[in-house]
Length: 569
Image 1 (cartoon, rainbow, N blue to C red):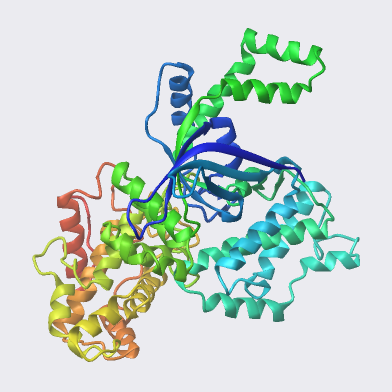
Image 2: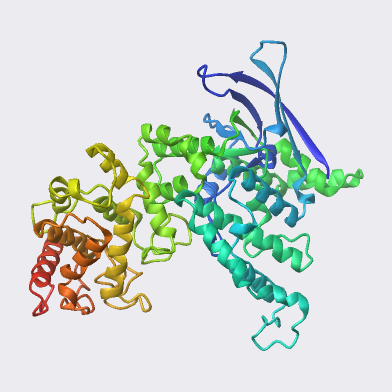
């Protein structure tokens, strides 16, 4: 495979004695696109990738393309990048000790690299980052599903084994799951920490597609089950683009416009008549038409630093939504990588623990909110719970505050913490500070309580099969239950109950018992939320609505004799 080498006049500087150096230079946009990858946080088929860049906004690209089409316009902000493969990047001083020199970037002609090789390279990079990654964590059931889907896509007449196919040859046995191997993978997945879980999922998706190509004896393809070459290259090019993807794309598209002009067509025609290859003539024209963009390259190859730079740049300059920020911070790094920048993220004002806690609850198999919360990416379906809503519910349990009923004045979560938490048997530690720290860590005892509480709420009151009902669990569109107001009311009222009853929760058994007693051992109607509350013209988040809902529930739960007749304010 052919290697391409680009060299640029450059300037090297250090901001502090502890920081990694920055290399400042400029390069044609069409060249930058060849060696700078954009690992986007987006959906490939129905699966999320593990990148940190936001998905490309076509509207912004169009605007920037128009901006760059005027050659008098200049953008002063440099693109920001960092090392992704330091073996392919070299800065050579003009003379010893000089800040000036040449930056050498080497890369392959990726058009010649087959899909299966790109997948294998990315798998190797992930294995180098996270020690636990190996075949033992791969979900074999998922691999079988991928094989079945790709076989069906290539041959619509394909039928999986056991579904009417008479062609049950030996090779087809791969779609049958070996239960003993799947048990091992389940055990491995169970021990993964929250922030590593998504990397394991992404690793499984990559390994699964490798096995699909191997089984079908396919080396190259533009796409395999939603994974494209373009997306994979975002993780494999020698430089990762931390900020400026839209400027880069706009400049590249602007350069391609030269191919459509009369002058451009005449240039290519003349080149072809003189014996040049048409493709190379087009590339030469684009290079000559491409504007040079300023670039700041951080000579640091650690993924944790890449995510840190991205979050700080975007959250401080152009704040992103909490859902996407939380998704990115908590699912792009392994536990070890995250720890190396955790305090710096906190110091920068990023609520890291909140992001970790919420990200876990949106993905964990045992969580009643799994797959039901906005991620901030394109492809989120309507009716998902907002990230900030789940974050608010988490804070009531994790921080033991925010438990004030809408119709009341007392924060019962805070009151319970002050009076009964010192005797809570679910935490360890000699001092109050140690007990607080044990309880509130992202995977602390609060999380088991939270998961169990809302699982019980879902199973007791909700309908998780048909979400388009008044008590549907999984869509906010119609549900009286699955929304910020009701979920908050229930949490606040439970803390009211255990505070009033003087329950210190000395064991998980105590917690389970208090839940039963809170629901009056089944006397609270399971159909409480499964009625028409006549909300067509009512906004749920109105103060008067919240207070009425809260008071109605509070009074009914204490004396569950007659359901409230109306919820209209």
